[in-house]
Length: 361
Ligand code: GAL
Image (tube, rainbow, N blue to C red; front, side, top):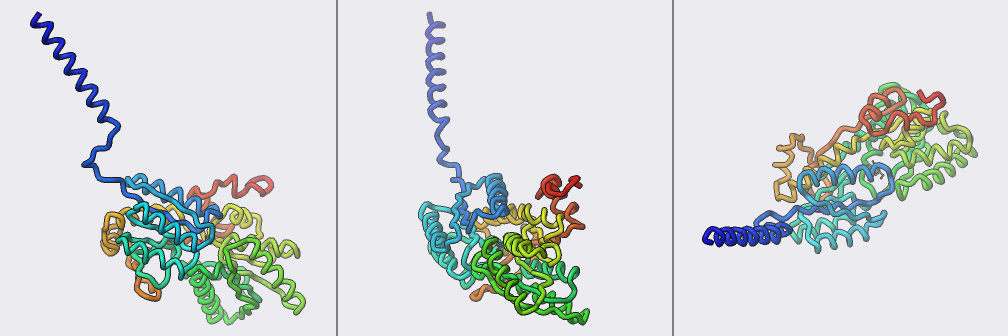
């Protein structure tokens, strides 16, 4: 009897314990720290590269235990500023911004700092604000490499410099690098480059580029001038320039540069209509940014972060301060080294790059 009673008490106690542990299982431990939240504000989702930027960024941030909340502004800075306000109201621990407009995006930093939230500018600098950190590829160098690549195949003649979006600080830095390469080349070789036109576009847009280049070609033909090279600042606009050249059957004769190692551009390179592209290992940018953002969210200092991650300090003037910046190395890609760069890195498969070539190399 006594034994039976003990047994009953024991079973009842076990039952209670099981119930308690089940009911607690789904609940959060109140002493566990809340998950860090990072707001990722993207200008656009259009180009292939930006989708990869987001993927690698999110994967690394998640692996570091942070949650990423993404918003895409579709090329509208006002919308991005509102998205930033929304995220700040929801509660994020850091913001990472790919701005549309180098100037008006400064509002985001102001609002974030009012709430003591740090901001990292991703790939594009934001001017005249108290930015916490900036990470990018060395854009002046990208521009230099673009021009250098073209000058190797066209050492003299008439050039069009097709600038990127005027609202993007990178477009200006690329131009500086291009001009520096041209100047050095002229001094070194004594050969003359004539710049027939050097517009900036409204957007990094293929169709806008096609239209502008097509109009320029018509105009220069009428004036009896031959265009020998087009230094386009990215692959989308290179694609537009090449479409304009195709219409007058000079694609492959006029040298054209680009940037981003987009699949279509890599295909044009092996097919011979585009001369070079600049490959920026986006995975490195995205993953490093995630590391930096998580550390900023934990309120680590920019100087400490740079030191811990082993980066050399670059202090970049944004008009109101020297921003602590991380510069990554861009890679120059032509027909000759495409296999050992873009393909080797797994950025695009060999099958896809050579898809349109007969006999598929
Ligand atoms: C620039 C960036 C380029 C290109 C372009 C178009 O800011 O540096 O790599 O992607 O935007 O979105």
